[in-house]
Amino acid sequence: MSHVKAVLWDVGGTIAETERDAHRVAFNRAFVACGLRWHWSDVRYGELLAISGGHERLLRDMSDRQDAPLLPAGRDALARRIHEAKNEIYPDLLRHVHLPLRGGVLALMEECRRRGVRMGIATTMSRACVEALLRLHLGAQWSDWFDALVCGEDVQHKKPDPEVYVRALLEVRVCPSEAVAIEDSPAGVVAALSVDLPVVLTRSAYFAHAPIRGPVAVGPGLDRRTGWNPAVAVAARDGVGGIGLADIELWIDEARAWRPGSHRAVPGNGRSPPRD
Image (cartoon, rainbow, N blue to C red; front, side, top):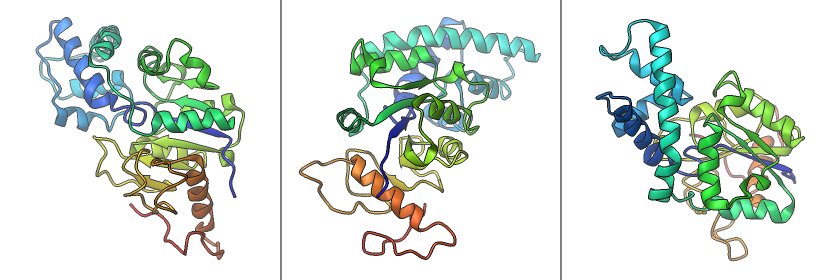
């Protein structure tokens, strides 16, 4: 059976529903602070999430606005100003709304610590925003939980480019076959799969119905043992209601058994490989 030595976490949408309930709100407040009469609705922000990175989303949005600067240099300067304002607003916003972690996230993190499984952050979110969220939930020594911390400013290319995972794997010092990524978005899945890193997908608000292929398992959240594809092997695991490392390791084994050209029997009563 596979033995996972490292778990690499995406942040926005995966660890917490930051995109809808924090980043979008902070951007709208930043527009006001910058004297702009712009507003991102839930729907518009969902569309912009096809682009990785806040700065990049701003530039994409400006391409559709008649009141945006005409020249690329002007747009870039305005995007930087908005993004800086948003990053200043974000930590205070988190403290006031007390955005929770997604269900099952803390339990899996704590299991990793008990078992000596390394953890890493692999996100296109800024380091300041990651710190604001994790300090709130894990305390002042939050960074001690992780052997790798790769954020948006640490890479030249955002997801779906695999650079963030290449760097995270180097920092946790394991090969892709010994690790797993926890993701919520199509771009994140593509980035992880590009380096042959197994992915467990926990669907988030903005990608609840997005067609996503390639994860070893797709489900509604780490706190639930129903609704997963493939199904969890047993309804309950030692009285624990969420997804644990043993479930992830079994999914990885099943996915490897179903690789093209493989004729091995699949564990778990011959369940089908995940399709989404």
